[in-house]
View 1 (cartoon, one colour):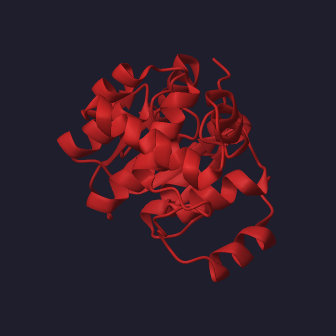
View 2 (cartoon, rainbow, N blue to C red):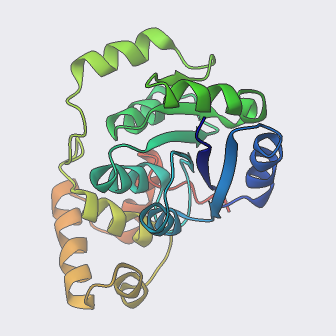
Length: 218
């Protein structure tokens, strides 16, 4: 049987070490790499063969949901399992909308990680028992798969810019992180403000936190 290659993407070392400790004891499963943020996860997913990615929902620079969306756009065969502290319907909905194969609550991660992998590689969806199944199933039936604009009309690129703004990065720093010009970033910021009818960085930050783009908990 072919070895299942796994990437663990989480900005908390203790989480990565906990998952790795469990998986290192499982025959047929190899932790191929670890990532501390969404952009590194995207790079690694492109650079090496992988089967399953555990993706923290809240990471600096690029959150796990938007990172998952980008990875699945070019690597649709990969199975991505979101790691989250949140059982709130809002976070689960956003995650499933990105096309991931599972949603694992962090307080259950060590106990469920192997079962989650086995489920998704068999083509099944894995959801921690703490998530309300009826709500999720109803959501899947009614929401178009991999819908690109958010319900507020923001594109994936605009969501990236918004997250970085909310995390306090300057226009110059955002431009460098996204490999774009400062003028382009300024244009994105203005479009975001126009679409959301918000008029200050403070308002944008509050919106980003409320929508789960960032938690600023670090």
